[in-house]
Amino acid sequence: MARLPSVLGTDDLPLAELYAARLDGDVVQLFGAFVPIDEPDLPPLRAQLAAHEAPAGVILDRWSAAWVHGASDLPPAAHEFCVPIDARGTTRPGTRRIRQVVLHDPDIVVIGGVRCLSYERTAIEIARDLAADDDDVLNALHVLCAASPTLWGRLRTRIDEWERLAYKRRVLERLDATAKRLPSETVAMPTAGRRSAV
Image (cartoon, rainbow, N blue to C red):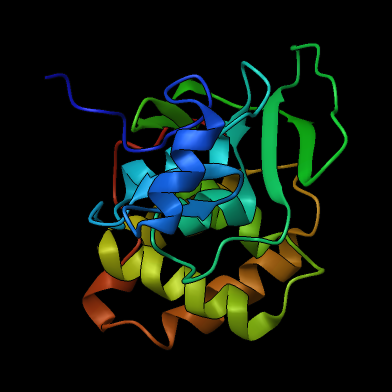
């Protein structure tokens, strides 16, 4: 017998069966989808949940990407998506936000079959989020940088080289505050092999 997907919807089973499985305790309902109760809470599952019923071609952005990467314990109230600046996007009513941004190939990774911002680009985008609480941003940056020992240095170099970055000073302040929470060996600046300014 074929294994059912980790994230179930009405394309997989009739709604009545999904609700019956929920009542039996076999699945839980999250973000309009159903997940088997024994499915581990890992990045591929989070990515699939965040992108469930999302428009085609979108990329998980900001706090949705941070949640997928494990930098946030809770998903955002409204999932955030982006598309490349040259893509034509449409917005749909509901709990989704879609914005157009300049992206490069290394800024996008695929997790669980879903396109998502990379650790590096996620860190930049949440550091630029002025509406976010500083403690939430610093905690998320700490988790991302702790998971990738060279990330802080790559971020600092990339931000320094980025000529036209909105809220650049705020991003640098948040990165420097994050550095104080990290072991000294993780805040070293890269010495060579940096790509040119974004």
